[in-house]
Image (cartoon, rainbow, N blue to C red; front, side):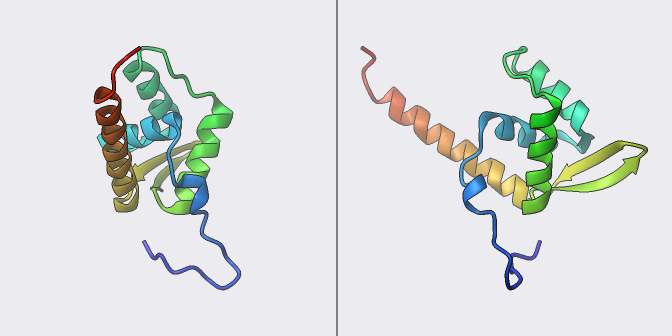
Length: 114
């Protein structure tokens, strides 16, 4: 994906500096295989034991952001069903978030619980 920004455009860097839990699990879903948004939401609900459920507004807002920044790309359209796959950029973002979360857990583990 080309990282060059056209004149007058701004990279939406700040909005995705850190991933929300929903964003993290959505990238996790796409790391498994290409899928549509509804299948990704079902994966997330199953993976989290129902703890995290993405409603349509949240799901499609995140898919739009991810597509805009190049984390996913649309690979198939069948009627209203759109199938996406993760890009190298999206995989890198997922890996970085996993590293960040591991550091958070290590920091928490090194502190006493009161």
